[in-house]
Amino acid sequence: MLKRLHPERIDLSRIDLMRRRTLAELSQPAHVQALLLELGLNEEGLSELPTELHAHCGGLRIWQYPTQFSGYLVQLSRLAVSSYVEIGIRHGGSFVATTEYLERFHALDFSIGVDVIDCPSMAEYCSRNGKARFWLLNSRSLEFVAKLETLGPIDLVFIDSHHEEEQCRDELALLLPRASMIALHDIANVGCPGIRRVWDDLKRSTAYQCFEYIEQYAGLGAFMGIGLAVERERWDRMENA
Image (cartoon, rainbow, N blue to C red; front, top):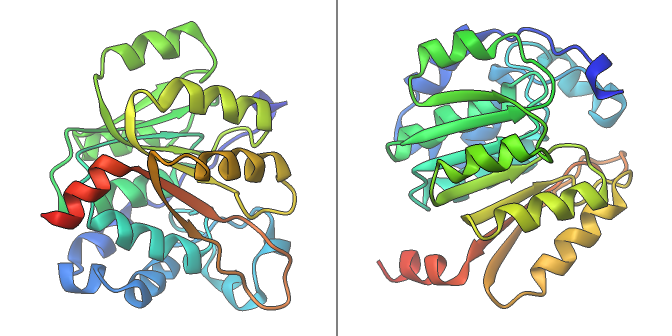
């Protein structure tokens, strides 16, 4: 089923909107929220978007709620992220936006997008940003594990792949020993109760400082949602710096 899905090209010219912003502007959630609308949202699943956001679809085709994604990104700006892996990138918009945002605050060693489906804009983006890579891989394959072994420790992993509990648990088990920060998407999505269960289990661990970005738009069901788990040791070190 997944291999029948066909990601669309995204408008990479819009990354200049991110690159032209000042750090002061990018540190304000309200400003980042407005910027995400300029960068462009994904038009798939329009029933999950308030009608006033429909006019902002296109561009990078970011599949996130700006109300959630903005707060999450601003939190990341304070955490000195130097390596990033995103599993499940669809059209690539959220991956591109996150990579561009992170690099404004801290030099990236690498940023890797992973998907089982080829993403037509990734070759061009990786040529524009030498820190970015795209792995056309199944995240449950031995090849994926082998490639992870070449990376060493990872600062941040964002899991947004198949949205099934079993797969999410498998990916989490694989990546928790390798990453000091893990983010899960769809922790508040009414259609993904299994992801919420995985997130709730992770929150119960005393080894992580956990944050949720689950703000909703009035009149719509509970959708999307981002959970960020930061290793307690890393969090304490950043807080005391």
